Length: 351
Image 1 (cartoon, rainbow, N blue to C red):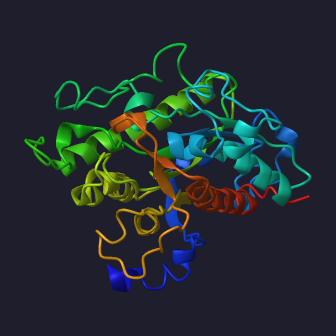
Image 2 (cartoon, rainbow, N blue to C red):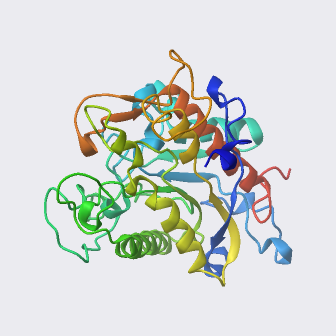
């Protein structure tokens, strides 16, 4: 572990490292057909045919995910304000500007000043994959082990950003509180079945993308394009006493391997972007886990952490992302989205 982090953690003790390396991402070839942009065919810079496939600059972007898209610990969006059919966009409001959607909006405006983007926040603190689809658990384990918000944002009238859906979607896909398949510590945890957890994760991810495609088709919009990643940040298992075992919480990392297996399961698709995660750097910048995980050169006392505590247990967000952590997540995603839209087939920077 120490050797693998040696280069990535140069300067991390000062809390200033941003990981910008991207993993190759994938989009179904069917998603990349058609022409035009969200309600603005004139913005199609790709031209008819050619290697751009007729795809233009998508001027609408919808951003889905839990608290690592909202940043409530840094004056971002609190509660379910964005998880409604219209989403949430208010460029003059502090909570929007501090959210991932607001930061992407600002980054795109700076990168492509000739364009006018609308980037909607569509997330909620409990917007895990299981909340975005109507797929049941394959292993019925009941409360409190079952996902806390199963299907909450999948029912009629409750689908976020269903009105005027954007054909370009950003999704941070996570499932940290599906306890039915183990990955915890403590007395009598459920059997460890990471394979079942990942099978459900992949099925829910596919269903979410299918549902967005259906919304776009019904609205007469261009086909779906997207960028996705696993839970960007890492947090220890909620623990009121900073138990070292909480720092070795397995399920906190399972979304990363699930996304890698999803990519492997889609070999015949066209490259897009799947954004990397910052788990190792968040572990390093966790005040009570860095030493427990045997990292070298842990941040000194008084260094600004990337995560902090804020009451409650479990899904009630005992650990929250601080402003320092939010800047790391936002830096990764804004750079990735801007780079993706500048490149083929979108070419948002083309005059």
